[in-house]
Amino acid sequence: LLGLGHVGSAIAALALARPAALERTVSITCALVRDPGARVRQPGVPLTTNPRDVFEGGPEVIVEVIGGLDPARSLVLEALDRRIPVVTANKSLLARHGNELLTAARQAGVPLRYEASVIAGVPFLDTLARRPLASSLSSLSGILNGTSNYILSEMERGSDYRAALAEAQRRGFAEPDPSKDVEGIDALEKLTILLRQFTASDVSPDAIEVTGITRVSREDLVHARELGGVIKPVVHASWSGHEIDAFAGPAWVPRTHPLASLSGPTNGMRLCDGAGTALCFTGPGAGPRVTAITVLDDVIEATRGGWAPSPATGRARVSAPATRWLVRARGREPRPDVTSFGDRLASCGVGIERVSVGDACGRGTAWLLTHPCSRDRVEAAASTLAAAAGCDAFVLRTLEP
Ligand SMILES: NC(=O)c1ccc[n+]([C@@H]2O[C@H](COP(=O)([O-])OP(=O)(O)OC[C@H]3O[C@@H](n4cnc5c(N)ncnc54)[C@H](OP(=O)(O)O)[C@@H]3O)[C@@H](O)[C@H]2O)c1
Image (cartoon, rainbow, N blue to C red; front, side):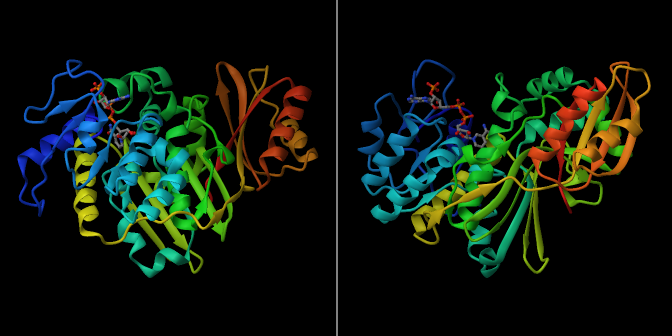
């Protein structure tokens, strides 16, 4: 084991408990940590601070659960160089260096598996990769971050953002530093991993539009409902070959969409092919125990020498899609001048489909659902509206059915 923190300890506990469902006995030869005295450790696991002890202890598989980019990247490369199969749950590492690592694994002739890196409790990557359907997939939509989904669900129930985040931290759904979750980076990294797998393209996370949930207000959620939808922290992508349209961020989702009903920390994924066949997977996205179960599953698969993920075959060309938008325009007066707001947006080429009116922070506010257009166009229209009508305007994507 490289790392014996939350996930590493759960893996060790599960392996040592020898559950009957695990069809092979898994023994932990050694665990690499930073500081052996730093926390209460799982008894029965030899500790080291020297990676050599892990590599030279004759492991059949190395499990990387250190997290972050360094030293995780160099340790995984060293394991592969030594022809030791690797299992990891590290989405940052896979999003940033996945193709390099998969190429190294291919050259070494050993598997690199990462089922627990995306929706840790639902092992769907391997299941799908073995089916012919995988090659005809052309789009995906998902809720891949339980922290953000929990916070927005709590806000739907009446909490404000700060209280919802504090409750998420108290219940263990959010890290002490939640920025990667609430800024959308965690979901973006998982989307990058999925796109590499489903499009065989090398995708840089920096090429994909990402927004966080921090600017979404309680009022936005109430008026999103009045407009027939709900605001969810989603990822979406559609593709043809290496051409990809994608974004990650909060979006207005029609109530009829399968992701609209997923609340709390639950994750979900909807995959579609060009003929309209859709597959949905939902379940727990994180948590040491569910992650450990999926990692151990991968460990056993890695020793079997079956299917393993492949490196990309080409470089992705990523664009942000044209979608409908939810524009929140908060004026200076107690009543919003909806006609003037709509006219200003229309004069910039942004048509309005539906409107909900209310107030936010004591100021008349309109929530306007637009016709589809690009981000550049809606942002330019929102700036024009803000300058002309003295209101502040905020835009949010929509997820199309
Ligand atoms: N937590 C989840 O529910 C979950 C779910 C899915 C995926 N993951 C992924 O799993 C990975 C691990 O997460 P975690 O929550 O278990 O993290 P964690 O609790 O912070 O544990 C990290 C472990 O790695 C060790 N470590 C860190 N830097 C090191 C270094 N430079 N040299 C040697 N050892 C080092 C730490 O040593 P010390 O013990 O001495 O500090 C600790 O044992 C991450 O990539 C995360 O994204 C987590």
